[in-house]
Length: 453
Image (cartoon, rainbow, N blue to C red):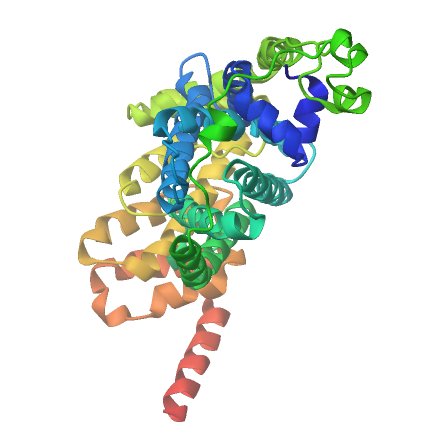
């Protein structure tokens, strides 16, 4: 029977605890509850769970797929002992018990860094927490797999690192990286810059180390270091609870009884109760975080539906502090596709009575104008003219434009002969940004470059 002490010993890789979890049928139910609670820990202050409860179930689906793929890889690499007839599904279920029992580590994701740190620091803290949990899980699963497959941790580390590397590369591919904005010197929000830097680091390390894990896993597979006769460990019912009579009659020693994970005096339902509690506790926490998520959701739905006026009214009705910490209203990315939506929202925000709404969207539009300078095409002429017109009507725009003067100078005067259709708008932009001085600097730099050539 499992107890809280078994869970704690399991999380630090104790062999008897790993075997206890793998062979206890209740571990699957407990692990399911732990994974569910981990889903709440991830999303309780990030999503509006009343309308989108699937966010809580997403870790469950991901863990099922991840555990199945990892176990299949290990099972295929393992060798079958003479006379053994391992059954894939029953072995996988035991492996899943162990895999799910690592879910309590994800409770660390519930730390609300955003509520006491700045945007960039909060992202950095979340990334370090992710790194800690990921490293702990990899080490723990390496140890657990070595126990279950009756081999060394060195042998199991290679296939697990190979799998983890591929998983990290896939995950990092879903992180939007504003490469053009970063390379072009466009003003990128600090939090977005931190996230992009982390994604690029993971991508680089993942690609560089992938051949190492492939070679190591290939050597392990060739040597058949893993043993597939794991039913001897997994496909058995837990031994009956030890009793004081067994000790009295000498069938086992008192020391064995004291250290056995199947002692009869251990409360078998302790972890099941803990699992239910880890889920139920969110009924107390969610009412504190979901109202702000409801307001965020309402605004984003209005924007997605194209109801720009309603979205600006919803934003203006409340102060920024009543929305999630460090939340940025859409559209957040500078990628193409949201050009007209961004223009419409910024123009509508000029009528807003809330300074924070107007300043946010005007700042977004300044970034967009910088971005257009790098990706400008003939069909963007109308958008650029309209963007400059909107900025000319925003009191906050002049100061923002002046702070970005050097970058805007490059936009206003680079390839000017090819942009005669927007020359008036570029002149107006230069006047608002007060970039005559910057223009001379750009011209000097360009002349110096030409002389060097």
